[in-house]
Image 1 (cartoon, rainbow, N blue to C red):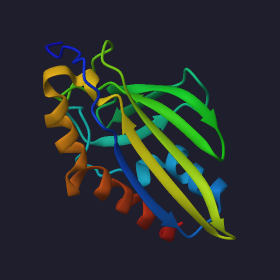
Image 2: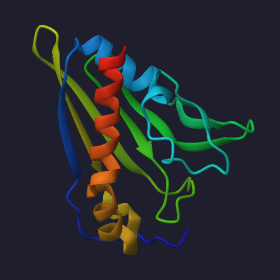
Image 3: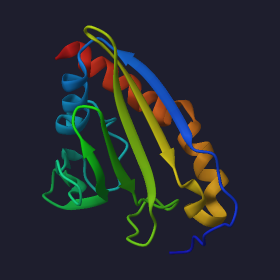
Image 4: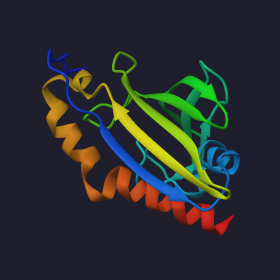
Length: 161
């Protein structure tokens, strides 16, 4: 991989939304039904997404199964505290390929705001691990068509379930 770790810390990308459901449902749609809401063009495989899988335990894989039967890795589960929080690694480089030696972290928390309403807070951190591409990748993840759009798709899926 061409990225080299930078010594300075890059601020995480943080996004929050509120969805109309309890934390258990918010957690389950986010993790077990990601295929229904993840933007179809946001994948690294050579064919469209058939299924996105997050194995529900620390050490579990986060991967995509494609229509041609191939699989592409995204990362691994670091933390699994249903329904409050989970963390996964994002090991996709600036070249949009999986790199086992690149580790950034996505942490998602689900907090009940009131009965039937849950705040979902996503933070993508450790961006300095992109090395020379750290600022570029931070800009990519902050763009409206990245985490903001992805969470909008998730919100729409909550309403459709």
